[in-house]
Image (tube, rainbow over all chains, first blue to last red; front, top):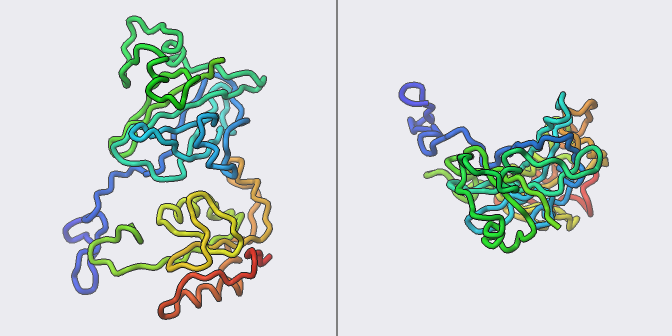
Length: 185
Length: 122
């Protein structure tokens, strides 16, 4: 509020919170949502009552990485039980600490299972990158890395993961990239 | 912002946050998130620590939970619970909760645990 609509105290002092802090409408703990083209199950994810610290490990089925300091963001994960189409079940990651502004995050999913207990299929875009079939395709949101190994070498902790990235903009200009990942033997 | 980075001109604040375990009206996760964002420590005698919150015996500002023995497994399913419970409206009238508020609101009051062991009034 501003002008005559602004809230003031009894002694006339501006009491508008937003005149001191701009509100951009974004949560600092956004819901990160993605899916995979398979009938996903929640098995293996750390849920709301789980041990959040377990998501701060490269072995976690879901990982959120702060690319500035290469630390893990603790979180829990839901798989939407309301989806009408089992092939479109949303995976929702809930950070439990505030994300930083102007920061790039990578979200990793690995070892996600389908109803048959098999590894879920990779997302189409990720599969193209993983299988090096992106010739002629514009990678729209992330500089394509020359190879999976170079990606791993920049995050030595995460060896064994293959990766690709794409995704939406996040709060306050932070960039969140949904990285679909499958483990490699 | 409330404790760590108050608004210009704001007087120092103290915060007491109280939670009932298994609250259906206000999911515990939301309260934990709020407490964590403010930077509140847990105040209890239980030694049970919540992620990101140190567990103290007393503090200027703090967070205490009261456990009625409700099975919180319903939180695992991300849907509105089919059944309600009395947790939300019960915390505020518990003697231990009232005593904690009373001690907090005294001049120079602090957040103390007013339970012997875990706070399980149920």
